[in-house]
Length: 180
Image 1 (cartoon, one colour):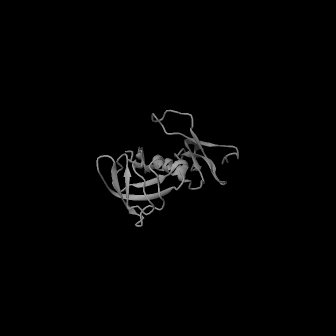
Image 2 (cartoon, one colour):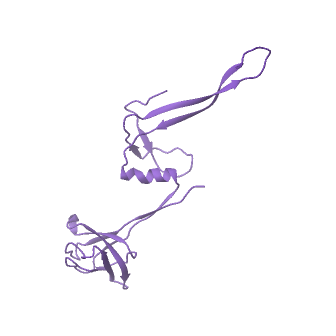
Image 3 (cartoon, helix red, strand yellow):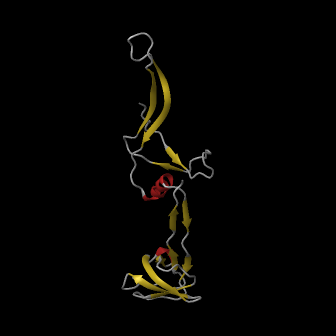
């Protein structure tokens, strides 16, 4: 049994072409107890050859390796593990827009310069990241500026936001498809 050295690293990268080597793009930290084991199956010759021996010969058979990695559940690695287990990940980026009008604290509607999908979770912040908050909108109406109705929290927005610095970002979505 071979144990990895404490200076060993595991690198990952998304394959552009299956089975074609690429330089790793990021490193995965693991905990102690990670082990690398070579498994070699023996091929036993148990033929009868005019003697009382059960095994006439023992040869090296097919070889494989196992690598048990003990890692912490980092959120930024989770999508990579899912992609490796399930299959390709299609990411749809969120809509990045701004407020079309100022909104007061407790506002039940938002006026946006671009449409966001209905039932989206939005991140709103003023310039420099001040007054950062998350909320969910229900229906989005209008043809510009768009009016989005705040559904969660039920009390509306937590902070007052200005149109000049109010950045709005909807969530990105991931769609994993099973490889066959």
